[in-house]
Every structure is written in structure tokens, then in C-alpha cells.
Image 1 (cartoon, rainbow, N blue to C red):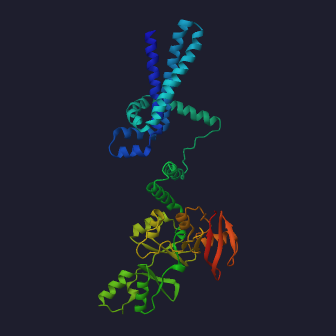
Image 2 (cartoon, one colour):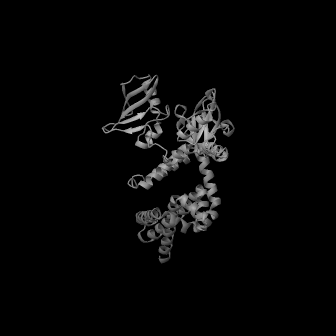
Length: 419
């Protein structure tokens, strides 16, 4: 009797071991394990190897767990039948169910769930040789399971959705949002991480500076006039054009002009055309992530955006892309939130060229930017007309009132959020 009780206790302990191992090794943080492994932690490396073959791991644990549970129940049944006869079957079922559920399932899994990383590091070196030892049985059972599922018309798809990893990261970013809403630093970090994930989905046309607001210089003007235009601009790089604005022949840097004037002993009579660098044209459908990498590869900060017909649409800079990640980077020459002016009644006066993405970011709104990139564009898309001054529309819970229009272009809008 004592030998049987000791054997049952040992089997329950093994059952608890398998149950805790299953929970710990499946719940353990993969990023943390990879970080520890990169620092030389051998146990973390073992955890990573086990998680890479999760099917084998789960199969082995299930085989071991069921084996010890069934053996423990068989011993208990045999022992109690010897004392109580046929009634021992019922007693064994009740007792073993209570013992297995409490001590071999709930307790070890609860502990492993609360201490998953620490438990996984401790148990991984023990589980790994068991996985190796039981691998033939596990392979056989997995093959049998696949064939059985195939007979019922169920196929296991091993191909992962390519967007699942990005969505998993987005979910991880938002995981503890409710607990950390009051922490401004964490809010900013979360916003930057979201923006990094969005780079591969945003075209340069959505963040570019439109051609109407670009400072462009006619290369045929007198050098002194060109120098005055450069000094009056808040930008250091400007496109040069000849004959017509679409005919961009290069890009001039303010530093090159100053260097040429200095070399010419202060004389403004310099050859502007010779100072220009080649213009770099990119299609408006270029993704921000691709353009960021292109900027790094070419060691350039400035590109001209053209449409499918080759017409100039605007410019995009390295700073524009970085601002998509970290928010506005203002210097002493920048205007704070140009084009967005809060009013005392809670409304906002917005320039028509103000981008929807910037408005969403500054005011934490959620206006769609799939069909239009500017506020004027979203009004035209939703109203399906060119509105007159004074007309007002209700879109997405906001009131849009046309304040000013220049020909067919909406230049100023008042946006009133709900009270």
C-alpha cells in the first residue's frame, strides 16, 4: 500500500511538472528570451529552441502528462478496489479527479502563469531531453493526427498571414494602454512605435509639401535676386526651374550660395546654375519606409515628388519622414502648427492644404485619409461638389464650414467638434 501511495504521489508530481512546463514554455515572453539569449543565457537559448518547435513541445508534454495521469489513476483504482471492491472504482474516480485538477493542473498552471519567464528558464533544460526521448512517439502521433484531419477534410495551413506579425506588434503596443494612459512618456513612445509600423503603408504623397507651398527659384533671375529669395526662405534647399516651374533643373543649397559669395569676396555675381546639384525625382506612390531607406543609401535629404505623368507634385525630405515617427521637429525658423489656429469657441480655423494626418495627430481625431490627404480634399470627396463660401457640412461627427475659397480651391475652413 505504501509503495502504491508513494508511486501515486510521484506520478501526481510529474503531472504537475508537465502541466506547469506546458504553461510556462508557451506563455514565456519570446522577446525577453531572445534578449537574454543574445547576452549568453544558455537556458534562454534552450527556451527559444523549444518554442521554435512548439508542435513537438506540446505533443511531448501531452503524451507525458496523459501517461502519468492514466498510470496514477490506474494505481489508485487498483488500490481502492482491493479495499472497497467494485465501489473502489467510484472512490478512485472522485479522489483522483480532485487531486489531478487541484494539484496537477490548477496549482502548477497558476504558478507558471504568474511566473512564466522564470519558470520557463528553470524547466527548459529538464524538458528538452524528454522532448528528444519521446520524439519518435510524438512524430508518430502528429502524423496520425494530420492524416485523421485530412480524412475529415481539414488541412493544416502552415503559411502565416504576412500581416500577422505587424498586427501582433500593434497589439503588443496597445496591450497595457489602459494602465498607462496617464504616463506621458509611455504615450509618446507608443505613438512613435505605431508610426514606425505605419511607414510601410503610407505613400510620400500623403506627407509631402505640396508644390503650391514650395519655395522655387527661377534660375534665370539675377543672382542678387536669387540670393535675396534664399535668405527670405526658411528652407536651406530649394528647387531651381527654367522657363516653367515644372521644368526643374536642379536643387540649390543655401550653404553653397554663401560659400560661393565668400569665395567671390562678397560679390553677388556668381553662377547659380553651376552650384546646383542634380534633382532627384521619385513617384508619389513610393512608400515612406522605402524612401527612408533610399535617403540613407543615397546620403540625401531632399527629393521631388512627381505623378504618373511626370508633373511635379511636391517635395519630401528626410525630416518629413522623421516627423512621421517622432512628431513635429521645430526649430527657431519654423512656425508653430502653421495652418491650424484654435478659436475661443472651441472650433479650429484650418488651411485647406493642412494634411489630415497632421490634424489627426495634433487633435487626436480619427478622420480617414485613404481617399484624400488634405482637409480641402476630404471636403471635396465627401460633398462631391465644389462648395461655396458659407456652406457647411457634417462629416464624421464634425462640422466643416467654408470660410474662404480662391477660384476652385478651398483655402480656409472652420472645423467645429461636437460639444
